[in-house]
Image (cartoon, rainbow, N blue to C red; front, side, top):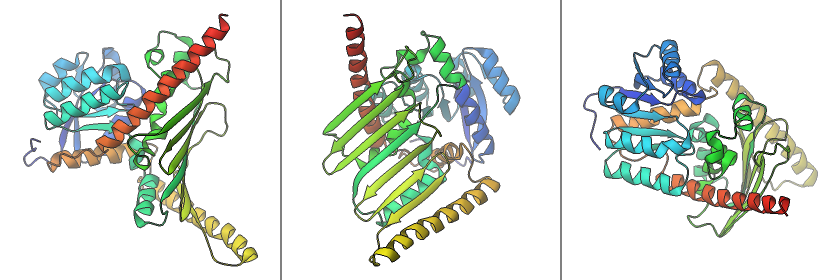
Length: 369
């Protein structure tokens, strides 16, 4: 990897000025390690709008022109998944490190090509698995490393969503929207969040993946409920994606041989349940009050972190940016998100997409009989 001699900041460009781009630029504005030099979108007016609001001088509608003119150190790619491979490869071959928003291409082959190209060009391809660097995720990692969880036996990863937002309305009303071209359609655009948290827990080759998918809302456009069972060796897991359950939450429960933990990503809370040798009635009281005390402590911790600005809605994203920049500035070629976990996430998503397509095809065949 080519070191950035004596530089304290990396020069950043962003390609794709849609909804998530604004979150990127807000977090970048808080970073002491980056300078945004250009933004690009095929619809130049979108790039101009973000440039005006964030004080960015470089505005482009052709990303190849931007790469040539600005010569950035890092390119943030916030375009739809089907464009990420082409743009990512172009950026890497033009001497840039890349941060690519989830799901990091449309399939395992895309992810593998991006990673291998980055390696061969001594660049980093960072997957935008931003919740891995949330404060609550880092608490879980510390707990895991302490050994207090024991061996992982089972996990439940849950992602609640809504069909009532502006983005959902876009692809519900427009059958030509890019999301309908993804192998896993709507699921593929979001379930990487639910999967990348558990990728480190499961072996490279899963022995079993079974999916149930259906259109609960009767929208007639796509499946909106997904249940997945995963198994490999001594580890099993459930994935739930739902647009129907309220309140909307996202969480992960992990069951170990020593304790059970829950990470609440919606409310940024982490807590654990462990055993005790105390007698029955005392144990039951203890098992109520000890978790309650921990939850109160977490509440105060979250409040303090929010008031100080340490914990924001997209703070995990900002933390991941800075971690990537640290690696680049220190000539550390290892990716902030391990490539093995990125590929494992992509492989699982491919199988889920395959099974969901089969289910949809079977439903269509029944309808036309």
